[in-house]
Length: 556
Image (cartoon, rainbow, N blue to C red; front, side):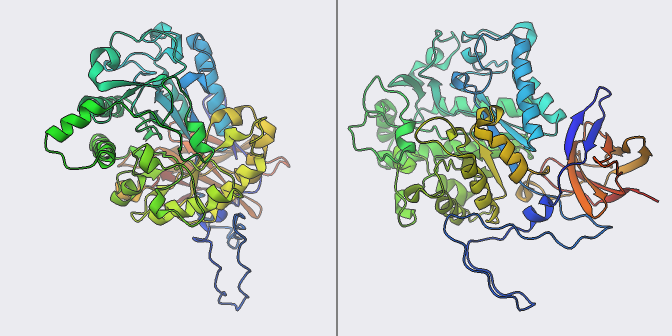
């Protein structure tokens, strides 16, 4: 199904390709082990070859009166504002052009059947929204501290436009970076490097807030909770920048690439200049060594964020996207590479074990066939750490589809999605970044739509934050000239964010999702002129809990 907005603010749901994804996603098997013979005595299928995506299971038997389960998969793309990677395309665009670019991204995301955007709202101790805590980002207007014209609030605009299309909006914050290497304008008067210089250190071509300084961590916590309070976001997201990626000269920048290519250090690394906060810790009676102290600084912020976010709004999910290789003493045989545990002081395994996040999005930016950093082996590693059954939704390096010698093919991304669907406990992924999908590099967007995203999907439920289902909606429907018109209304009680809609055409159930803000729909006749014979709907809340289904229409 494709959702098209018309001028009367009614949603037209156009019949599309076969809607079997519901059964496919709901029925994915759990592990890469061989299956056991079925009750009918069928032989055990041969083991899956390492790295190969598991075959999708067949759909359940067709029931003309009962549609299959709703497809569940978190499908997101990161939208980077830093250095104008994704949006806005330049730092001197008018507000109107910025808005047009944002709408183009959201329209493409909806057309591809994505269901979430992860928007970078704090690139480097700055903001793409009006804030009393931090200055406007220079990546919006070309000068840090300069507001967009016309009273325009970019974050509010993104939220409203995303929700109008049924997309979640997760606000992405960089927790410690204070100035990017590509920044050109002077620091604003109210930037933390000016208001609290003791909390900010120079490291290569970056400014970095020292995690050992309580003022730095408190600033990040205050900034994030301010956004949670003021904006109707669906999630808070932080990336892999904790302590900075190590560099070897005072003029270096971009050390992430070395880590991504499997580098483990070896050159003389420039020490992060946190000697004052370290000495203060020791003089205060601290007993941890320096590495464990640094990890504890980061751990304290992660725990405070998780508790603080949910104290403000219980339904806002907290996600973290760390570097994709785990700590060295736990890695599977054959896996080598950069250690975020020892270099970034990020103990992602502990965060999972303590349940300090709602979803982990490890950046698994390597091919399935690259044995030292094999995508599927690393995914299984993170699943094994996930003893609290949080969501694990890996990050895919879709932007590696480029013209370099290290390019991915679109088939690699499709294969990686197949791997995620072969593991229960995954049911989601994120693309870095939206640019590759907007440009349709080497046809990747076309392949995703044809092979992976054939129909819409709901985000998986998050029961540890709340499992109460909303009331069933009321529905009215009638045959119209070009389709079946449906009018929906939420039941009493908890708010509803989406409606799940199944329509039956002959022997096929088709699935679509509509935002609750647009409850008037038209289920269009298919290309052959056939109308929907039956329509079934349910209501879905912001945590993915689904109401009882109700029959909205049945052709007499």
